[in-house]
Structures are given as structure tokens and as C-alpha cells.
Length: 196
Image 1 (cartoon, rainbow, N blue to C red):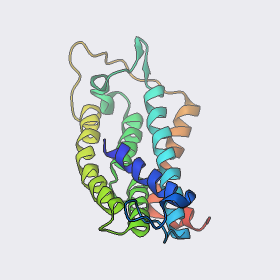
Image 2: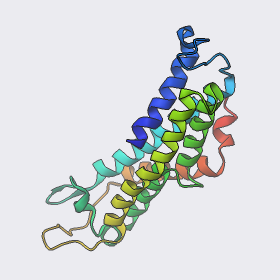
Image 3: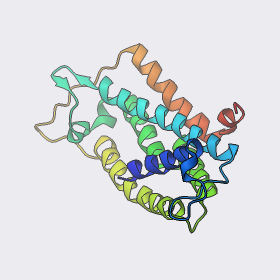
Image 4: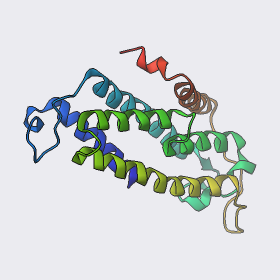
């Protein structure tokens, strides 16, 4: 829900930038002050969110055991014991999606929230929506931590297969690159900002 709301905020800001019908009407969001910084904030968020989502789905798709694919969160139980590398990468992706600093997800959320507040102001409908998105980000953290709890803390039950998860070398390098990008963009956001 929090991710959907955050995407909604960024789409509303994009709509404000692209559509003159939002400008100046008191019953709608006033986006007459959309600046280049607002546009950059939205674009940065979308780039970072794309990397995090691809990395997360890449982890899930790469996790296969001899007896089949990993399909449920419960299947992640004991991942840290069977494949520490995959546990590390999925932890980086989940923490980044949750917006934990110093990972790129924090910077992405920060940039889209700032862009939304710059576009609409704190007391505007967009400002209220942004504050709600910030609150729901805290709620979403619970769900990301539930995934990490399965992967890092919970021991597998007797029914859960404990065969090691084998990841092809090319896939491992790609996932490591995605995790590295998440860390690098979080520590050095100017790598993205200097491109604009």
C-alpha cells in the first residue's frame, strides 16, 4: 500500500508537470510552481525504484532449488544458512525498498517526497498525500522486515526444502551489481543528480 501511494504521489507530480489542466484551479493541486528540481526528483525516484524492483525480482527468480522454485515467503526460511550471498542481496533490496538510509531507496523516497512538497506545498492535497505516504512507508517497513525475518532468522520447518539454492555465476554477478548500485547511489546520490 505504501509503495502504491508513493507511486501515486510521483505520478501526480508527473501529471502536474505534463498537464496544464492542474494549474491554478483551487479545487485541484496547484502545480504552477513545478521546477526542474521537481522533475529531477521524480525521475531519480523512478530510476532508483526500477533498480530496486529489478534486483528484488531478480533475486526471487534466481532462487531455485533442485525440487522447484522458491514461491512463498516461507520458502525463504534458512536462506542465510543455505546461500549467504542471496540472503545478503535480498536484504539490501528489502532495506532499500523500505527506505533505510544509507541505501538508494531512502534517497529515492526522499527525492519524490521533496518533489511532491515543492510542487504542492504542505497544506495542499498533494502535501497531505505526501504526509500519508511517509506514514505508510513506516507501515511498509513491517512487511519488508517480515521477508527478512524469514530469510535471516527463521529456521526452516521440516516440510521446507533445505537443499542449497544454486545461483548461476552470471546471475550472481548481475545481482551483486544491482546491490552495489543500491549502496553506491545511496552513499553518493550525486552520481545520479550530476547527470541532469
